[in-house]
Image 1 (tube, one colour):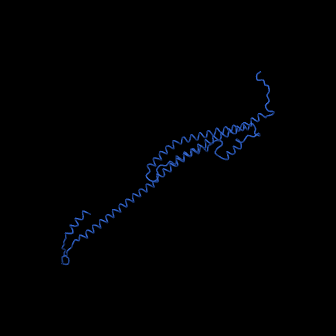
Image 2: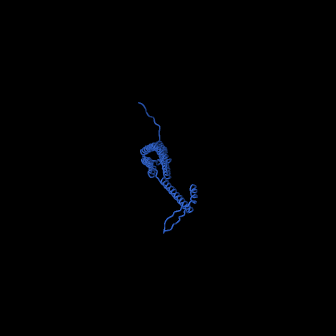
Image 3: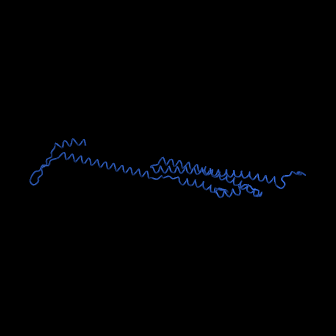
Length: 244
């Protein structure tokens, strides 16, 4: 606009005269510089409004692009690997030998095999129950070690998934991708807690079976000692011939 003003000022001095025949008379056309300036200013303001509208459209387009990025889904998913790890651990727990994680089964075992020793039990039944309890304790220890081995195998998978999820979170292009990466990291932590819970449960089961075996063995030992001392007339020392 500063460059136009000298030209407009000079135009105010000049008067263009055009003689045109009309009905046999001459007419004078006078150039109005004020009107010209107003027209130029109006055109400039309209151009500025158009530029503002273009800028506004560009901002709206950028906003839509950013919204699209925020709504973009995370291309990486660790859900399948985490589910497989949990399924392996759950499968081992469901394959528990003998006395498993079932309340009714545990109650039946402690009312029979682990029941307090009574005088009405035969010696053969006492021996059979003792052998069954020993087998239960060994099976519990084996199950606990199997669960521990599976959890150790899952550690390598967890490390790989954690590295991939952290990388995806750092390279997320929008809020949704970052949120999904964070949710998958939480799922990974939940899977690790599930493995830890399974390990504690299996180890606790093995220790409980071993403790129950020792407790019942002590009770059975007292009963067998009582039977040995009170059988018939009790123990009577006699003279025996060891060698001919």
